[in-house]
Image (cartoon, helix red, strand yellow):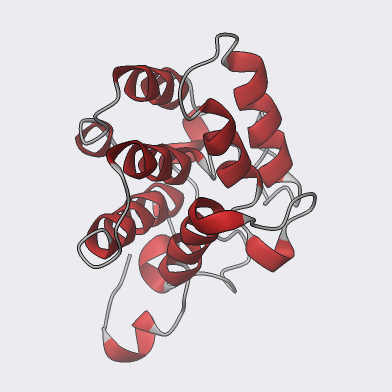
Length: 169
């Protein structure tokens, strides 16, 4: 994920993102993106699937930046939000399955971890909190950034990739 963190131009956003990424639960790098296998394509299942999903969602955003205009700070907020959105997918300790409120759990975790205010802080927290769109537990996406983060996550989780590509873990 370091290659994506380097793309964040704003120093405070980059350092805040790096702090969280460096302290993600170990399971984040090992588990599949979907514990049931129902909600993600095959490349994001199996060992390391969640990590691959997050990287793929970030690549989706970076590619869409070529055709959808955002300011530099907006791009930084989006990249940070996508890198962090599923950081506590199985809770703080790793439950062995997806925690339905992981959107809100991660947002609260960021709020506690980031004591100091910085440009984009609240927007990142809200993008993380609303990343599941209509399936969110507490906040539906509001505004351009939140809707964009949800869209990137949604596109990265579509199983239709398996129809066109013989992708295996």
